[in-house]
Image (cartoon, rainbow, N blue to C red; front, top):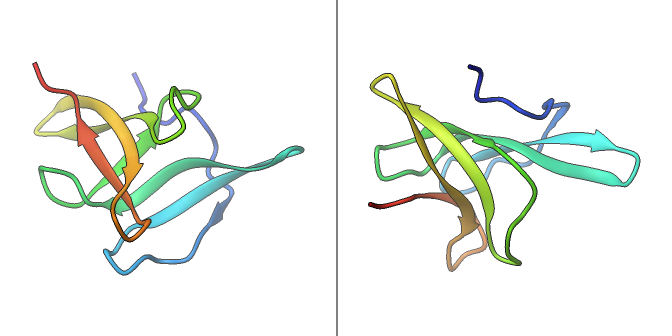
Amino acid sequence: MALQKYRADKAGEKQSNGAIPWFANWMGGPSLALIRNCPTPMGPRTVYVKGEPDTWFSQPAACRFKGKTITGYITSDDKGEYIFRQHTG
């Protein structure tokens, strides 16, 4: 099962934390599709958007680590840069 749900048409600007957001171009405007080199608790990873935003501050996402799919969400840090937080439990 592939992690990528949305196409990634265009890269955004590289952030100071090394993350590079990629967007899908839709009629309504660009939507976040994935983030390359996104900071995660497991180190920088490609994190894929898995669905529509579920709150104002987060969007469901997933990445791979040691052959396993890690689910969580994408949010922003204090500088407004994307980071991944994994679900616990």
